[in-house]
Image 1 (cartoon, rainbow, N blue to C red):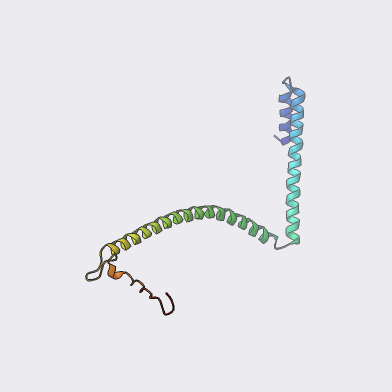
Image 2 (spheres, rainbow, N blue to C red):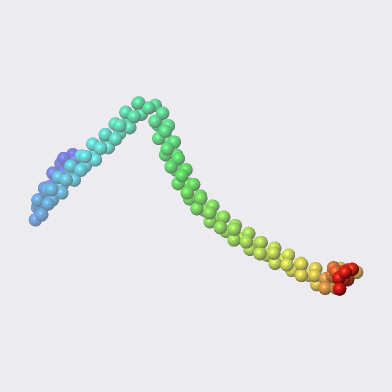
Amino acid sequence: MTEDDLWERVARDASAKPYKALALDLAGKAYTRHDKAVERGLATHNRIEKAAQDRPTLRVEIKAAYEEGCVRQAFTRQRDMLLDLAGVIDDRLKRALEAIADHAKAIAAAIRAKPEAGAPAVDDPRNQPPAPAPTLPGPGIS
């Protein structure tokens, strides 16, 4: 059975229906579009072959462009995953920084609360800087 036989059978089977004219038009348009698609495919193939003969490096260029596209797609997926990972790392670093700051505050409070043996307490007046000496009026000042 050839392709022409198939299309004749489609037309014959469709002619038994009340929409015979519509079926014939549909079959004719499908056949025409099929032929045009085949012609376009062959023309594209011929253009590629001619370009390959004119430019011997075309095969390498096409392969490089294809691989570049594949790498770009893979990088896009990896970039999204890396951005998610960076967000998680950022959150964990913020929590660690808060914990370190809280710990440093607690240590500072403990140091202020417990003076070393023999050292005066922080609130001890002996730890305060001396007050400035009162000034006396000089000569000629009343």
